[in-house]
Image 1: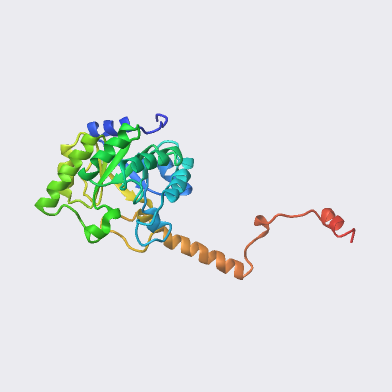
Image 2: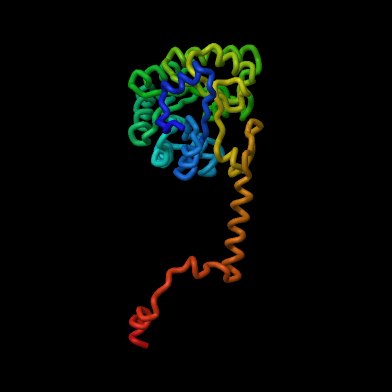
Length: 282
């Protein structure tokens, strides 16, 4: 078995050319990133969905740059191999191109990530180009874009009619032309997602887009059964860790209440002669 090496942007392009699937997970903290990296995923996205999943917010809108930087740092402390992408949160890039370049640079400089991701189609192509021209790698994000959920009318599939499907195709082309090295498609019908991937020379991963994209992305907390507020249709649960964790805590509670924990093996002991000296020779 060859020793692992750091995953790079050229590796992503090579996977596309070779027809190999890109594997991405979304997570936000040191312990989870450590495990994901050990498991051999290609990408880790530190998503602004951290607002909902780990901070208990109703949506992604309130997430700040400061919060993103903190979580990106935590993930980067854990990761040795995976390519790490940091999400640009709401209002960090929509206000001006200058703000976009500054905040993208901040996410790399202080968060330590390998690339940044931003939501939006052809209307943000000039922004993507400016960030790329500043030397910062960009992943585009089209389809269901949670930062504009009010405009979209809720969490639902995008590109289901001729007009919106055509726009998504145009968005994908515009972002590639602007210099994005990869796209993230979210909640796009399977055949449209497949067409977009065939149209592009850069890879496009899917979340809720069917099997024929250039790779797949899932939230680690969803797939492990740790986030229970809701489960999207596209999520496959590979474990039900919330039940396991609750049972473990209940067992701990019972053992403490009955005096079964801690046992001598979990306790630090003092020699009798030392204790005698502490008590003044008594």
